[in-house]
Amino acid sequence: MKTIRIEYFAALREHTGLTSEEISTDAPTVDALYAELDQRHGFPAMGQLKVAVNDEFSDWQAELADGDSVVFIPPVAGG
Amino acid sequence: MSAFRFVRGPVLPAEHLAPLQDPSCGGYLSFEGWVRDHNEGRAVHRLEYEAYESLGLKEGERILGEAGVRYGIEHAACVHALGSLELGEMAVWVGVSSHHRDAAFAACRYIIDEVKHRVPIWKKEHYADGDSGWVNCEACASAATQTPPASATGPGRT
Image (cartoon, rainbow over all chains, first blue to last red; front, side):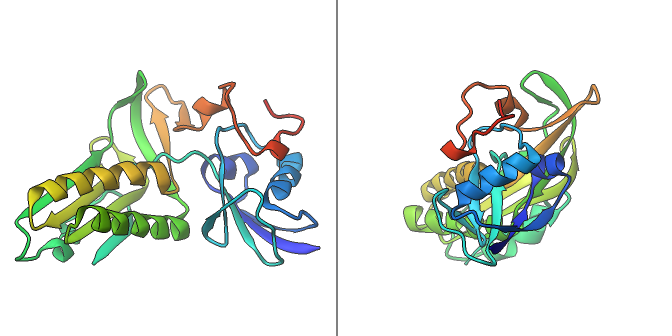
């Protein structure tokens, strides 16, 4: 089992009621982690999500390591 | 040489101009984004901005660096507001100084366009009728063209 920290922003923060959480998981990849968390939280559909691991943009297929920090990034709207 | 920053509340450009001032530069150009009183036909009352700051700062700096390489400008900066903003307040400012004006115009345009598309910043609109919504999110939620990762389409998603 790996310990992964997830931070939530904007619509995902409001939906989960969490700014962050730490979970123990066997999810091998970022997209498997998303699917596992989606089961728990029922994330709203929100278009093209991006993802960051350890404060850098990542692929959905990236492998997770113990202690990684993950952020799912809803469609952005700066400016 | 370049600086991307977040500030709480509206952007005050005078606080960020000094690094752009350079006697070798004959042109200074800025773009200011202001809080508008409407969006997609709805009356907007105020806005709230939120960012994933640690990644946002890195991506913002990358964009400023790209503008320097592409257009050969001397200095570039961008400041984005976070938190609650009222109508007319400044949400984002881009400043560019350069030897000549053409490069400054092009770089300023590049920076604001890339920041809007790439930096993880979210905007919540509060409407005059009391409703509110995350821009680009709630709208996508009702669209049939949702494209999450393949494995993420589990039960309970629309």
